[in-house]
Image (cartoon, rainbow, N blue to C red; front, side):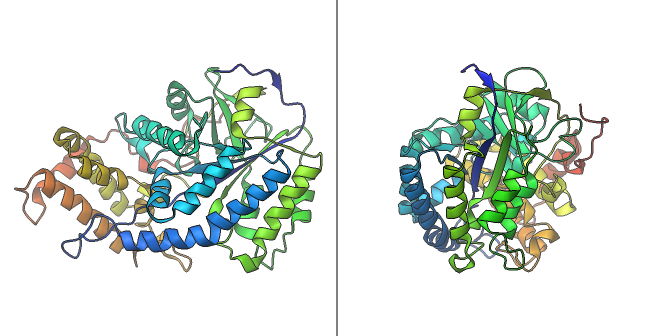
Length: 425
């Protein structure tokens, strides 16, 4: 692990793009079928590759070739990479070309964009290292920085990540986590173990993700750059994390979102206000300003664990998924185990929330109840494969589920972002 050489003495900017696509479920509730809704997956991936990944990557490649001081990073889930392999190889190749420039870094995450850190096993470590292997396979880069699903983090996750050899993590810079601290700085884990912590700037990240391309906001690259210039002088590490599908998918080309991105990057490349750096460069080259303690879970602003395991449907589904771990590992069936891992994606639990079914819903299901029924049909399918004697009423499954729910010694779905142990140091 490289030793940091100096404190950050000028303004630096990290720009990280997040990419994830779940494998959607289907086929079980209505009878024989395939484990995942492959045609829907194909349709969505082909569209997003055509409208977002390929044109945006082409734009970035052109700009980086002109201005190598433009530095970017991506965190691409393993499930998204798999779907590019199957349905959009041209898009995957365009990410490889960006990796070859030396200006683009890749950040690790759980392979299945899951909540595996909750499981009382080594599943979290397995998925993270599986994602590392995928990154090396396709991009030739061993990520040195980690970003958990939905930026979920606490001190314990930091310890586990450090034990896997990571030098840094990216998490949310929410107000609670920064109490008694100074905002956009480079921090270190409370244990003094050398793990660096980069904190996303919520407002400036969300301005790009949710407000650029919306006429009533009228956010131009010049206006955004003026906001960057107005940042407090002592806050010398600005970390922006943005959903990559902002460009071309959530905001179509005619919204002006591509023009915004191009002009912003050009200004960052030409002006001397900020030096663009990758997360790997930050953790390799710079010392942390101070240690920070985050004993309770934090997550992307506006969310907490209750978004995924907060209602009865979600808790029942999550407990049923947990109950399958040991029987599956004992059986050793690769296909069933792969489906079980797909079921861990956070998306499936979010679809069981009423919050997921507004006018801009991304859920493939028409309702939270429908998402739950589809998920539990997959659970039942796995149970029947494990034990063919299981009857169609699922009585045996229900007994196992209830036993698992009683044995859960920590109701993590009940945890909120508010501290349970007093102010954060």
